[in-house]
Image (tube, rainbow, N blue to C red; front, side, top):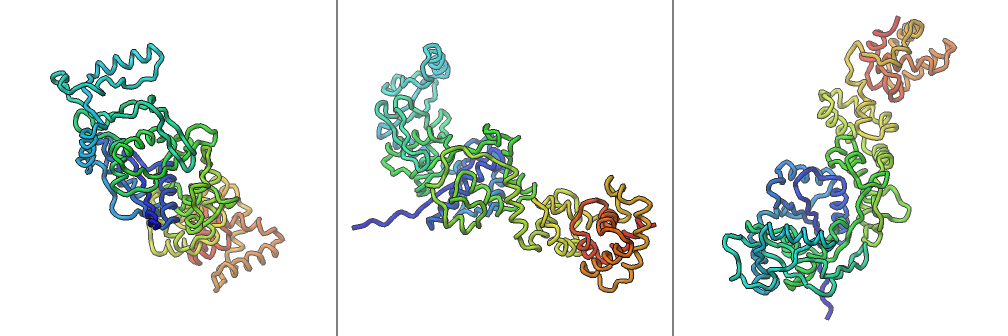
Length: 471
């Protein structure tokens, strides 16, 4: 009789001691994609047992970062600290079964043990001195820790979907503390109990956890529990091949949002950072869910590349809905750059978006390109615009102004026809008219297409700006 396959359950389990960094974002994405691909469940657990460093602000940052990335989790988040009684309960079960023991070694003893190991060139690890002693020998006044009784012979073998088979000599894995002297459970115990109780079937995390996996596998075995399957991801490096740091882009996910990246672009970029589907570079989230598998995860560290991220983001900006882009840009510029949102500005931004998005790589660049919409008369000119508006060009604008004023149809096409006819009549190349006109309308030598600028500003505002600079 065939047994029914277990439903896939993945989890993302960050510690709330800081922002959700980009490596954590990728780990969450891989877990989310795998669960979606398998028709399973993606759970969120906040590992907040470090009470001194865990903060509510960091927890909210994790929630916000995941939601912005579009990685909605199933059910309520599990707060690890709230489950400490359950973790201690399991420790007591292991004590009763002989898989754990009380250790009364003092800090002075432990330091002496470490110093001797250093002097003799041995690995620094606990020597098991309380492993087989009777607690009746315990010294007065010492609060014991509880240590896991690790197998002292043989090997612990991990079958990993990315790394392959990894073997650990048990003699190298000492008896780790599972409950501290103050009664608080430690990371490796808490993680095993929570993953078991949450029904996690697949763990996807960084390969810096491989030794933890060996220790956790031993705890699973001691409890007679089935361990999840494992997949350990190579870490993300900077463009120079060094470990990713802040100077490379090891920032919080919120920082990328503030730099103007779109969540769908971040998902596309991050999934390609260590995973591939042939030569495909650009693909939708739906395609990523359809194609995602553990076999295609790379075995080497990935290199974070801002240029590549900008290229991917530029693609998604070009295909995004104009109203959505305008709203996102407006919200970002209001929050970070002091814009004042009005219905008129929003409508102008939507109208300007087709021209703006063809050259912008981020929402910030969209906002910078649209800054002329928020400028007040008389415009402040940058250096290049000032040079473009010399006496001769100011007089030229004075001659152009009446022809634009005579226009009834204030559209980009109608404005273009007038300006082209004027340039031809003046025997000037179009650029010789368009560039000074751009400077007068935007205060800059760079802008979206000039006829779009005229149309977007509207008749009254555009004519007023030209008048301010005409002679």
